[in-house]
Length: 77
Image 1: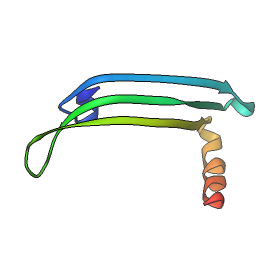
Image 2 (image 1 turned 90 degrees about the vertical axis):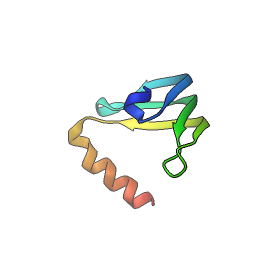
Image 3 (image 1 turned 180 degrees about the vertical axis):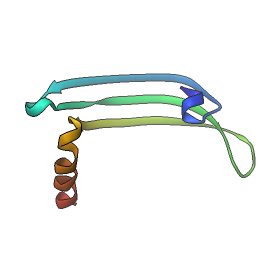
Image 4 (image 1 turned 45 degrees about the horizontal axis):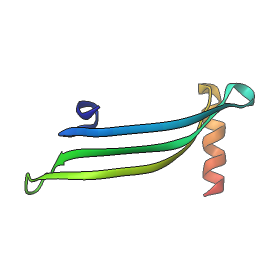
């Protein structure tokens, strides 16, 4: 995970998701992600540790539905 994220290290990582099938082949994914990561400051090169604690609320859809769903998001903003 650290290499993919461009991090010095991942000290801990936890995730919990509820996946709910929706009509049209879509899936709603909701949950929580927590992690403790180490990175290097690009200015001072000092080691930095950070806590991540984020709620997740996503909708996954078949590729042909993505343009329509993107339009709905744009309208909501």
